[in-house]
Image (cartoon, rainbow, N blue to C red):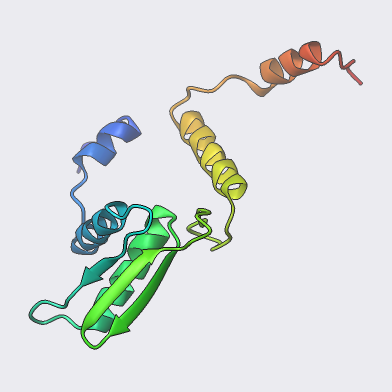
Length: 138
């Protein structure tokens, strides 16, 4: 029978070994992160790779990092750059807009805090909100 233990989420994430796909996505996310304003990246397939594979990996990395890329091919060479509007893209919905991304990230942080029992009771938060904004119970 296995031994069970509850550990902090941060510890589990630090000790988790990324899968092969995760390592590749991290590698391609690194390429994207190196791009500055007015710069483009160029990738050329290595042995056993195709330009289509590179394009698919770039798209996955962009989705994971919330970046919006333009990707084009010229023969075997794949060129990519950050989309000019600069708005982040939500990973799940594909919608552009900083507000959407910030709201979703805030909700995720709140859920993680609840999981770690770090949050405050809702009654306490609501009472503080009502007092701050002079709202009567009702």
